[in-house]
Image (cartoon, rainbow, N blue to C red):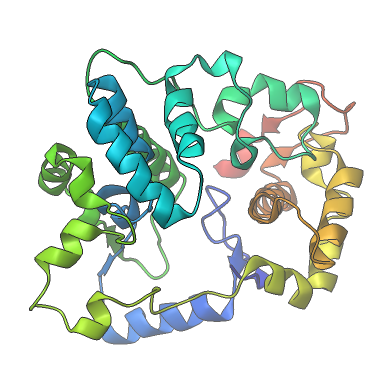
Length: 316
């Protein structure tokens, strides 16, 4: 994740051209010089083919179908692989059948601490990932998990505006309907096995892809980490967190947000990804305000966004 200079272009969404960094400029130069009109994206690969090495959907299937003997065996195998007690894995699977109101929201799904409490409560369902209860009766829990992941991808892709400069089309091979229908019908234990991410795909490509590529430990390209970006762009980021538009709109507490930035720079435990995403939203709001599209005025923390208005004349 990297930052660069703010873009002068109009951004329809926070993720569409808020910043222009060196990698994006090189990408633009590359596809323009070659006349490329289509870019293939690997989004959806982990979600569809078992790239996330978790046995929980498989355990939920076995619980829902009362296959307790096989469940006990799989718990033992995965416990050895994960180096975790089997009853911890069992609880992770069983908690999905309980009403969300009775459970604490997992740490990775909790709203960012710098959001105003009233704003966070009002949008709690969206901020916690639209978590729902797993049912004992009906479709397999793994199928419902697949649908939930697909909906999350749909919301993610809906935030991306189509690029206009340069103009090209993004396509997503892993989200092909026929492929998803096949993968959603495959037993979960065929997709993810202890120590084997994307197990079915790797076995299917034996003899087709080189061994070094097929069994590589990580992806070929590793982007610069968020903490490295924070350290390198510290001065720019500190300027961006002064007089924040999102604070004036009652979305977040600017003091808590600034404190979190300092803790992240010191290497302390903070919600780093949420920090970066918040800054993308802030940069987007500033761009709208500077172009006269967004009219905002200060308001008390936590109040509804009554001051948010779009200047229609500026869009014409």
